[in-house]
Image 1 (cartoon, rainbow, N blue to C red):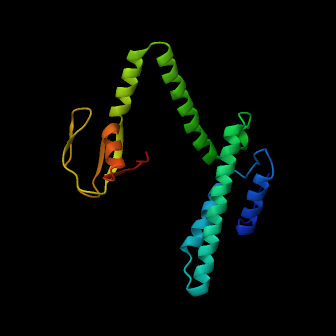
Image 2 (image 1 turned 60 degrees about the horizontal axis):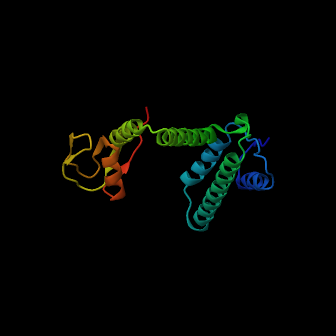
Image 3 (image 1 turned 135 degrees about the vertical axis):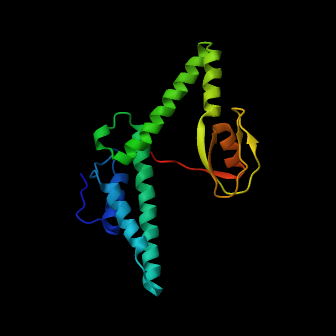
Length: 185
């Protein structure tokens, strides 16, 4: 188990190296990623000038790269080994794999609908997905629209936030008119 009294770049490097040197996912402390976030956050908030500022920015860059390597390697191991114990995963990793599980369940549901001739089920599922409400923030001005649910939305100005049907939101997002945002409950 990797426990850290004080997280720093050297310790992070050791943990990443250990993760790459074994096929099994290593156990991290339950607050590892929060500690890592605090470490990087504190660095980003420190004010320096000159060479100290450049050094700080390089440390942040290295810590960021190591963090990406660690998370990607751990998620790769999790996806390749269905026998990975849920108890060795961080809460953050559990959050990610829960979405994978949901995707697999949805895939199986759609596949079952197709191969079992349940076209009405597929139609209902498709319609629900199209009209599912999505919250977006507009980055460009946009005229009033009629949503796939036949309701009117807008007009919109930059920085307006609106909840609109998924299909309309995706079109606006892909055209650079709006950005998807999450509203925390």
